[in-house]
Length: 553
Image (cartoon, rainbow, N blue to C red; front, side):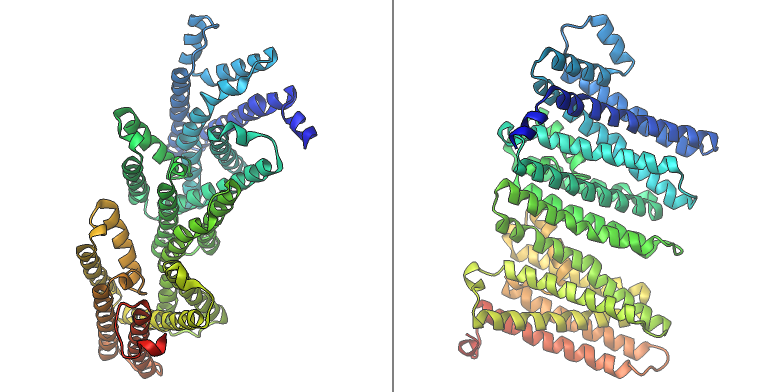
């Protein structure tokens, strides 16, 4: 390792990693974007030409102005310096300064740390990532054959964005943690791989969503940014000054695509993780549901964004290498992320496939059955995991009582989700325009009730999480179990909603099918059995007294 350390610190290695590699990647990114803009111009696509050129020139100007503000070279003639800045050559000027410092044998890393990482980070978030989203939108919306230059441009933009984020991470770490070692190399490679997954899935989700719902593309990004900015300023007391309140929105704008400033606080870290998962899955689900026509990339794109959950696992490995409490991170991040993902992907997928089977009347394929079974298992697993990590730590000890309770809870969730999904699928097959009404009313009543009863949910952030929890509870009871009144209300609303929807479907549907009576009986019996299992769980929690409590214990 000593030999590698000496190689890392050698003059040639420092010139390569501090000057040649970042400068060449910057040039390749800008030049390929300009070449693609010229290609659009000569092909007559003036709209794409203007947008592509705008996403090159605008951010480049901002990056050069930012560098001019962050740095000051007293040795250069001031007129030459001003000329270079007017010509937007501040980036080249900075790399020339670094190269000069390296040849003199001075510590160039300090000069780099004070200017280039933050400039390249904002340039990447203003140019490379928007350029990726734009080119992906052009490819999807036009349906034309993808050119080699488009592929090269997109790869260069992705590499530039990943390099910018990784460089910013490197220079914001403690200097002692930057020493060349096995731990450092592992952590560096892991972070790089994480950022490739993170940026790729985010860009894919945004590009797909824009191709189907272009007027609404700013909404999910803006909501994400607003929530993160308010939370960041609220949590960090240092950011409540005027100057820092201007800086926090900029950092959080970067964090809507790649996590950087959210590392400063544990709560902003897991909140950003949840919002990213929620945003990506919501956007790709909306695109898949509302798009017109069928394309070969539909399912691969849906599955690709679906695996953005890998980001959460990379986060855990990253924290593990930092020596932080991973068990605590898992408890605070993955359960809620998987829970929201299950309610936004697995459960809607179940309802959708059931609706397709009922409405089309076609023979059910083996693949559909496998897909529905996996979606059900994923949803049950997500709810059970969330329950496990929200149970008192003393109750999680492996014992006969714990295993019994775990099995009863899992069986309850199978009954509960199956009955609810079957009910929604049947109702949608006969009354598709009205399917949102019973679910929406259920969610609204539960959200208002939860906020009124729970004092901790009456601030801005608490209301947001209460609304999210109650959206989950319209299909599977989770947050409602915190309070006895919300549990009883949700049980009544679920029973009432399920029985009402299946009764209306059975009474007003046209034609007769072999599954009519079994489906009716299945929903009613499943809903009643589910309510019984819920009562047992509340007895275990000590929220409800029962004459059978001693037996259960």
